[in-house]
Length: 451
Image: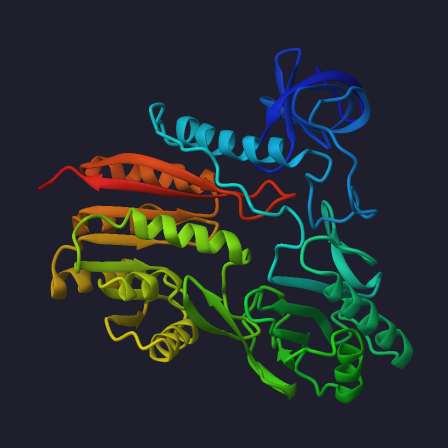
């Protein structure tokens, strides 16, 4: 029996969702951090359970042909990305396999048609949003891999832009000089929580936000000057106020410090207004490709009725409405619904209505009022839609369902809930939205067998 701390040799067969390599040791499945596909490593067990074990690479004994030299000096310590040691082509292939394996093992869909993954046009500097954390240990940086309570004070990053790292360095120097206190999650002392940098890849707009606790921000103009020193073309500098102790809580307020409290971005020929905490697809180029795919699979029903669940600020709904469809978008967040309505107005789109509410409650109401949808699009969060929502979708009788997923391990069980309502899975199209990480988006297209 394998023991924690024991070192052993293991051959890595493939990569698993979560970013680790998969192998077997004496019949036990082992997930190995830091491995690459098809290589032999010496690993050290970090966790052992009855059916599987977790380990980390101690030494690469026979390197994979897909193993490359990581570009970033922080790789291996920083949690921003975990696959820089794997060539991009192998990353993309692994993600396609992950989608297929999830459908088979978690959804029971052995005959699912999974198309070749749509690769990112560039695997570097693709993000339009980055969030850097303040912490007493490292002052300002990214979370350590595997340890959310520690920070790497990054001096470089190849995910967003060189300018964003320059902003981090400038603000970090200011915090050290003026003695401002980063928030300490252990003692709850300090006020500085995070630094958010958003970039309009198509417009060139830049929005920088300093997220703090509710107490007054000291030296606000010093923060503005620090941002301007690194990013003189920034179109706005704002302060976000976080009232609670948890970083995942919504902001209670956004206060402009200088310039506009938003940026503008273009996507799929539409113009969007994006605030500090607005959800927006993080990879603009790939989001364009995904919208094109959804439009192409929207069916042949012409100017038909569409429901868009988890519509956010209207990314898919507005593109579908502009193509001539009558669309009702549903989103739990009232702020997102307000933004979706504003985006519809600014783009001159009058065939889209937006409702704030829970999809489980609102969808049956929409069907009762408008009838069976010709198309239903959903883009739920990473946790998936869940069985209750999927069964509501099944009962809606939508003629075609297009499910946009950011997590194949929740996509598969969600689709399994829908199939008994008389749906056939036509195809699944993966998109690599996040190179250098294990994350993958996938769009599933299903048709109702009912006339």
